[in-house]
Length: 295
Image 1 (cartoon, rainbow, N blue to C red):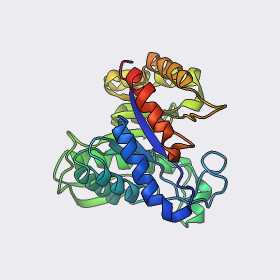
Image 2: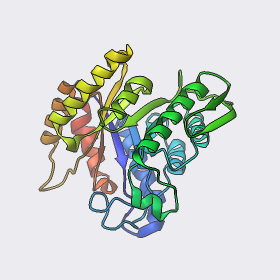
Image 3: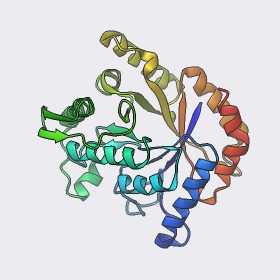
C-alpha cells in the first residue's frame, strides 16, 4: 500500500508569511518519511466545515503550488486532487501538466473531474455549465489528452472544445504519459470514463466500505464492457487522519489500511488537520509506513 499526503488547508499560525516555510517543512518531511505522493485541491474558496471555517480562508492556486513542491522534492509524485475541468482551457491545462511533469523529472499525475463547487465558480465569474455539459467537457479533455500524448502534434475537435494545432513539445517525461486519475464514484459517467480513459480512480473513504465496494463492482463491469484490464487501474482513495488525543490512533489507522488493502486499494491519500505540527508525519514514518509497505 502506497501512502499519499493531501494538503487542503493553508491556514497556519503566523499567517501568510508562514505559508511558504511551513509548506517546505511539510513537504520535505513527507518525502523523508516515505510518502509516495503529495496532492493539493483545485479550489479558490475553502470548503467550509471540512477544511476551514470560512469560504475565504487562505487558498493557493494548485498548479503553481505543485511547481514549488517539484523544486523541493525528488521522489514523491505530484498531483491535483482533483482538477476542476471548468477552470482552465483543456489545451492550456495539458501544457501545465506537461510542464509539471518535465520539471519534476516525470512525477506528475493529471487528476481531473467534472467540478462541483458552483458557488466558487460563480463567485470568481467562471462559467458553470449544467452537469451534462461539464461531463461532456471532461470527456473532451480526456480525449484531447490521449490524442496529444500519443503524438508530437495533433488536431482535435470535441463537443465543446477545438484545438486545431496543439503541440506536445517538449514531451512529458512520464512513460507513456502522466498518469490520468479521475475522481468520483458516479456509476454511469465517472466510472465509465475511468474504465475508458484513466490510469487511476479516486474514491472517498467517507462514502463507506459498502458504497466503495459497489463502485469497484460497477467499475469492473465497465471494464468488462470495454475490454479493459480492471487490474491495470490504480485504486486510490482520499481520507482524513487526525493523529491527536481523542481522535485517530496509529492502531486505528493501521486497521483502516488493512481493510482498504483487502478491498483492493493500493494507494491511500490522507489529509491531516494538524499536519503543520509535523508530528503526524513523523508518526507515519516510524509506525505506519513500515506496515503499509507490506500490505
